[in-house]
Length: 390
Ligand SMILES: [Zn+2]
Ligand SMILES: [Zn+2]
Image (cartoon, rainbow, N blue to C red; front, side, top):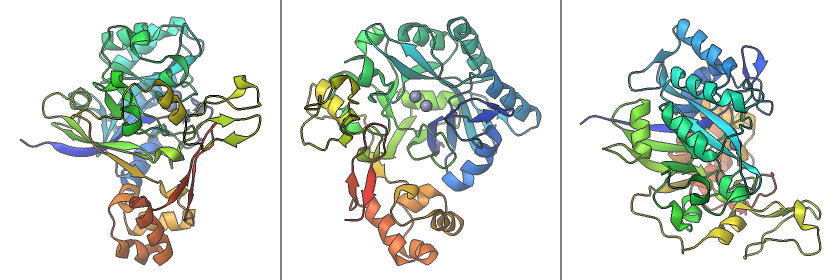
């Protein structure tokens, strides 16, 4: 049987559509046409989840691109632009009874379905044009609505102290969703498979690694490799459900230490903790300001030694080019122009090819990143971790 092996980044925002703001914190050139033009050559990804597709501004742009012949709805779901498949999706914020609120991602086969979902949400939100808006529904209600509209809903960046359901709102998903079976969960930049598999309640879920890109450059800093029967939404969904021959083959993600919320941060004494035990309070400072780290939080809710179920694919660590010391924008551009897409540069390109493009020193750094030989200083409290050469 023939099938396709391909790479997907399922969490990409839109900065502007039709000249108007969709996501305030995203860059101006993060638009649908730019994404379509930029991603295939630069990133080598085949499937992109566009998580602001519930915004009427983004929907209008989708429709305009279809009318111009740049996008074509695909049988089985998704919209094709040459070799790219775009999956319409919506990131929303939902309040929790106990405390806080968290982000969720709902994915749909087509524009009609995401429009129907947006129409259901509209009475419960303030500004539907903007990204990741608060919707006054419970996660269970939103899950049911997504399913009724032909899609599925999963938690976004599940363990982060900032709007992650297990990081900020609940200790387990049964509290949140009751008996509803979730397909998967997005790990977020500060966690990996091994960390998440210390929570026994998550073993049936497929883990998603996606970039949560707010700019073109950050697309693909996390992604997944899939084996699909066909390049369409239904094969993608089947892979996440582990149905038929469709599978996630590998998760590619940031080394968790590089994430913005890996360790606990105290803004009062400006400390990112590096203690070998979980830090749940800061000695001597007011506790209400503490930003819990994903690693620290997972130690708190873990109920088993890390034990991955047999269905779990390997997790491949990568350090994005822009985080590597000594590699400036010019070197990165040369690598893309002369060697290939970022993914190939980071994970596959032989030393000689890299050295020919940017010299021995730069090539050595990329090879060192591959083998995990770089020293990583953990991030926390919204600041990314850093890479040190030694
Ligand atoms: Zn989010
Ligand atoms: Zn997001």
